[in-house]
Image 1 (cartoon, rainbow over the protein chains, first blue to last red):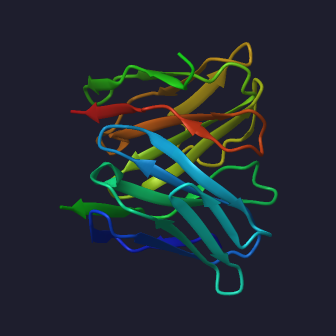
Image 2 (image 1 turned 180 degrees about the vertical axis):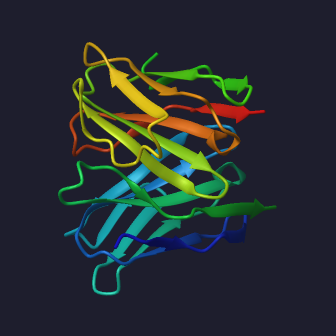
Length: 112
Length: 113
């Protein structure tokens, strides 16, 4: 079945890199996404990767996908206080009309 | 505006009342989705529209929940005879086509007293 897991909390110092991890169990995913949610706000699309890719870079963000291990990660370079938020990974699957299946979310805290 | 717009942003109502939540997708987006975010259940899919049709309603939790979309644009999610467990943030998303990335509104925070 579809099950997406993330660690609940990550704390990093400003200027360091953050790595947020996500594991999933269903290998039929098509796209994998990273969304950011700030308090009281909706979900902001950060980046996404097609399941036949293994890496995508977009400015400070790097997504790595290991299909063999069903592991997805988001690396944020030079983390800033404005990056403090909850980060969700999400998947879509073949034949499910592109509905998103979300992970549990990782709260990123950036300290000075 | 250019983004997905949801109203109201907050709704407080008494148990047993009906509520209507509105979503105005990004102009030209044919696909529209409703999700629910609650502390106990995380983010859950409710329903998907392609145009005015709903090919996937599998996430609606009970027959008290219904949704419609008119003119291929605005959608309303209706909850009848609200219960306390319906308290959550209801999020709407739209995408250009059914396989494109989804863009979310800020949600409606629903509180049932």
